[in-house]
Length: 344
Image 1 (cartoon, rainbow, N blue to C red):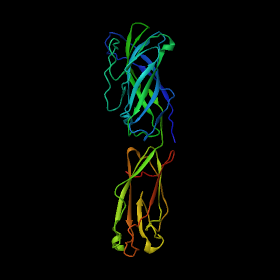
Image 2 (tube, one colour):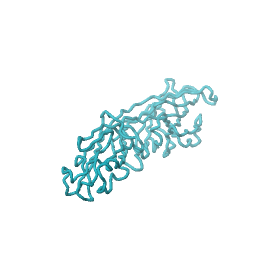
Image 3 (cartoon, rainbow, N blue to C red):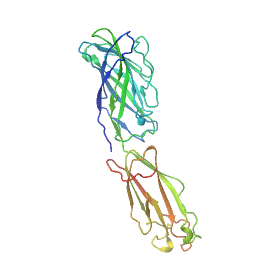
């Protein structure tokens, strides 16, 4: 199952600090960033090296009624969401009436990174500051006001995104402008200026970790001593959403040997299991069914399971192969209300 988060667009208003030197006039720039209609599809287990997804971002200068318009813009993207640490946004090209610089370099700065210090006013005879993208407009008509950035969004391996999350980026930068009077320069910043869709594929992975649930040789163990024999392990679960888990026993919590009959007292060893806060044994064999909250991706959670003998092997038919099978099923779910936090 998939979840879709709608795209949104936001206008960017750039303001000028009054303390800026008067080499150029201080004037607002007005930009709109729009992330288009492409969807970012994220498979938590799809690639060991991470997911690389291409998006288009339209950037439009909104010109003043008096004729003032931006002529150059340098900018990068900021986020403070801890879930976006390590995510890269790498422009690979841009299309429009103008020319660009800064391709092939990540322009996203997460909460652990310091953004570059941009020159203001923009020095167009010098290269763009590394880690920022520059666009120089060459047209003056309405058709030249919009350019489109083609960028790769690179999600690192082990990223742990909730399926209802949205990528939100804040463009920050500087601009030069002309028209409507003398040349001007300004700052650009808007919170949440670019929101990108993300479709997180529902994914789940479960693996048993720990020692085998093996009691060893119990042929010389009486019923009293057997009660102290317990074995335990964990099931490691990773899931991008809530999930359902169930457990049953093939022989109704009785171990027997390949040619034995688990219904005969001298051919079975009774035991009990503790799982998800429930206990099952030969007198209570109903399936364990629990709806669990999201485990997350990467570290995930550990769900403990333990088994304890209820009788010894002194009175049982000799065999080295007494065993039973616990059948544990994990099923990813979407739009299911979890009832418990399973594991830690």
